[in-house]
Image (cartoon, rainbow, N blue to C red; front, side, top):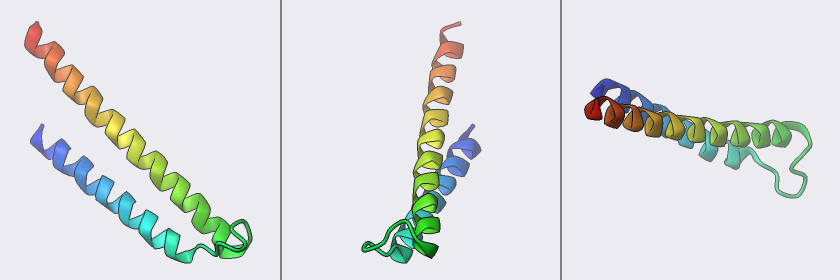
Length: 70
């Protein structure tokens, strides 16, 4: 189970790095045109990925506690 925690941590850091990269591509004067629009979608997708990974990690902790009680 320890490998799953490491794997999700690595994916969270990769998603955070993608957020930082995409923020550098944003043109704040026109955020919905050209490459800036693609970068905005990338930031949103990376936030979603982080949320999904955190929910997955919490569900695994709950599953472990449920298995310990049985």
